[in-house]
Length: 411
Image (cartoon, rainbow, N blue to C red; front, side, top):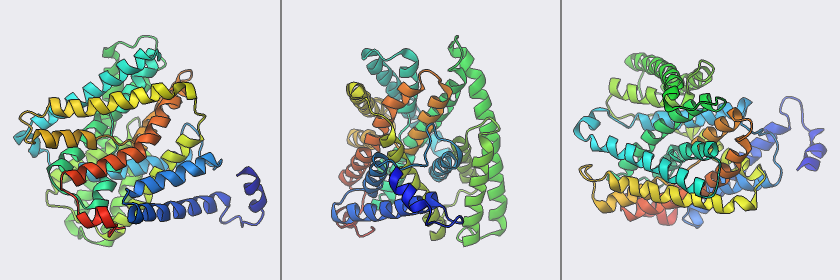
């Protein structure tokens, strides 16, 4: 890849530059691969995106520094923010008043995941600070993967909605706790009471930023048509501005977007019908996130000695996700079969996990490489395999379109 870069760099005009050409071709290949695997292999499009990103990373694709920084970090944050805004906007808070067991179910699932992953990593003699960081990351599933799979197979039903809600709540917990852990990594005393201050700062700034985004969009909806193309542009630009401002002010950009979606749903409870233009722009950013995840994970040096540790993390996380959902199922309004399928649907990890691992790696001077060495391979596996599991679950739950799953009509 280095030789190829040197050969062709002289042919490119300064207005474009080699990185622009590389990323354009990479995204084009990813889009084609996603279409092909979905249409001819009945696999999620994400599998094609991930495969192209992994091959590019193994080939030495340049332009992505680790930990994430600069434009790549911004685009990954924007990708996660858009997805969390959309998933947050699907949740009506009044639903929790009628079914509070869903909140308990989410807490049990997240807590059991943390405990199981931490115990498994400690069993393999991973140092406590690294096990703690990876257990926090493992709490989060991927709203991006699940949302993309739901859109591809056009799924709707209790398993779909419950999985999206639990994924969104799990993302909330993981983002807040990882932000707190980042503030504690360089301190000797890690008493749990000292987590309150960084959690309070992150939550406070994120709530203010999210409220600002929600108010701006609510005011716009008073005189703009929700189905208008201009409304979509305003929405996307507002989320991008919030993403750029939230982190430097001490908050979390994805958390701000999630809270903005929740608040806007309360202000504007009618079903949202954003036009196709916004969906295409959001899909491009989400696809970029999937490609970056695979690319970054494939570029990192893999230690074969850690393969059993990675498998232990994957196994403990998968069992804990299913077990936590089943444990909190009584009184939650779903059958045991639906709860089992919902737990399996929480398997995927992708751009949110990558963002959290990047934050922890940047903050931890000495343990950052080990966090990345275990976390990134796990995320790469769960990006593709988790998408396949989620697709299979929605099909088994009979909540997906038969034509989409088998023939790729919506490819």
